[in-house]
Length: 227
Picture 1 (cartoon, rainbow, N blue to C red):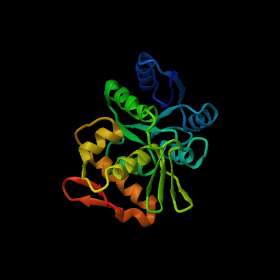
Picture 2: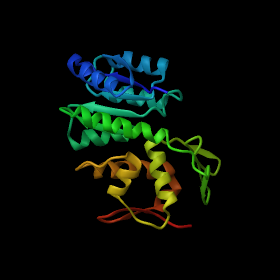
Picture 3: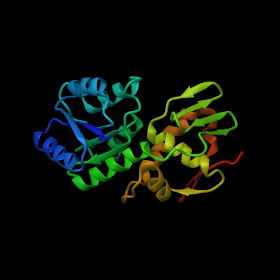
Picture 4: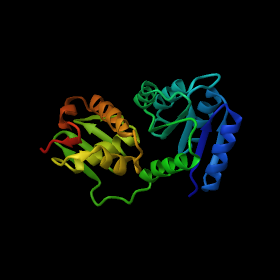
């Protein structure tokens, strides 16, 4: 089935450039040129992925992302932020709000489509033989992408879910940042190891009492404690 991607971008030239390359990859494309229309379109059409500019009229991209993650209909739609704001603090803020990836303008359309393909591929993985994993009172359901601690459901983005799954499935073994980028994000690019660190920090915060189960192996990566 053809995947649908929503582009929320106010610069017409960039909007048309991204739209052209995504259509060439076989995606159905929706477009909006301000934040409010983009949010309305996301809720109405429920696209498979959203490419979101940060500096938008009406409502900026950070507010749009917050609203998407607060809405039960759109909270699990992956978001790729596309922006001219390339400082590390801007990247971290975007990822902290729940974005799955962050691309700085000027950008390579090929890199953008590669990353989008990698994110969407996470949703299309083959069903695992095991449909549930359990670590003490932490339960992971691979079919529904849901996580519980005791009886409380923990709200994770798809990227956070896949990161937790990769770590739990490899209990006791160190996963380097490059391995995590390859397995969870589906690609490796120079300078993106910090993306892993940001997501691990978010994940630790969300799993609360189990945060210490994710051990930092200094200079290498992360390891999930064995039971």
